[in-house]
Length: 496
Ligand code: HEC
Image 1 (tube, rainbow, N blue to C red):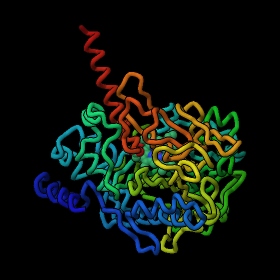
Image 2 (image 1 turned 30 degrees about the vertical axis):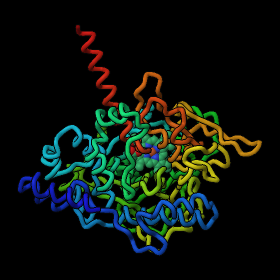
Image 3 (image 1 turned 90 degrees about the vertical axis):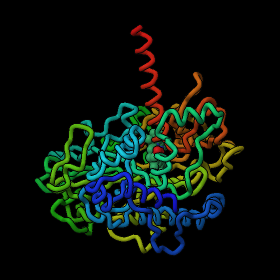
Image 4 (image 1 turned 45 degrees about the horizontal axis):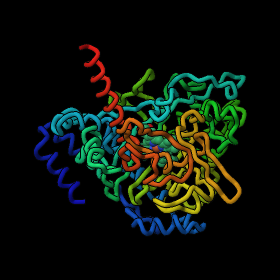
């Protein structure tokens, strides 16, 4: 990608002062390119025709190829980058990438101001899961956990925090094309285009989710306790009402021994949350994790009550991963799991069986879930029907919290005389919900979140909107600018 390197050279040469330049040499704000690990059968970017062959093929072997592609991406993302970011040496590739907050800041200022503001020292802002807080669910709020609170006073921690980061290609695309600016998207609408221009194929966007281990959350000053994901539940009226948040999981507990920085031999769950044992107690080395030090704790910023301090550890619990290798993007998600060979739904033993031998260490302790199509068999991008079998793909740490009230659009998937309609978060499909990412411009236009069903790009639902290439972050950033602009106009009018 010559244009990328060109940009990096300009940044280094003309925009940075001496001190900033030194910091930039450590880590360009765009971060490391996605490496291509040497895994037989894995390529990146994989040609769309190859991917579509697997998606449309639908055989067990085709699915295994899709799974291997996802695991290859996961291996690449977690590869040590040799770069230092947030005081973490040799940070994994995904951690070096530009964050949504940095891109928003960049879109408001000239590139120059940005680089002075972010280099020499970047900060990683960990936020509530915004997808959830939008609907009034705050991940750091204390939650009642009647099922999990055991007699001996063990209270599992159910808080999670997220970030969104963009690889150098997608980050620079958003920045160069001004996609985080209302004026840009408004212009697309004015020129009667239904959608912003496609991202370059090698674009990658990820949403990592963390838990924070802090001294005050430890059991016996040593063990961090969290609920174990029990697998996709049957949908009950309670789940329709409240979703299936971590505080309501009924799968028992797992423990993390903060004194074991290596790996464990554990692979089980304590069903009664009665206390740690060798089989249920994991080491920090079983997770992708970062222990904060006096030198780097200040580079982490938590946008709520819980501050991170030296000695705290961030555990990577989950990560959403999307790439523009196909027109409707590839969608895979990963979540930590006690026994990676036998992960619960929405993962599967078939997905686990596709883990390549090259994926080792902490990243091999995660489960995968995939949504390379909305329904099975796959339908064409336009002109298809919502028929066949649902393809459910979601992350226990993200979408499972959604109750039925979250979804503005649900449609049935019809299979002969049978019909299935997803109503809650554990019945979602990444591709369907992200297909709806759009900014409404006309008075009657609407945007909504969706469960799993087939929707075409030219569906009448999109009338009066600009589709944002499956990226909800663009839709969110730009819609909030619309709201601000409206509020200003309103204030201006009322003050007259
Ligand atoms: C119900 C709707 C919905 C579903 C289902 C959903 N997402 Fe998202 N996703 C969002 C929203 C809204 C955002 C933006 C807010 C945020 O940053 O959390 C987002 C953000 C993201 C981002 C950051 C980039 C961006 O701008 O969109 C990625 C990557 C992502 N999701 C991947 C996935 C994957 C992979 C899945 C399936 C496993 C998935 N999503 C399922 C709504 C959804």
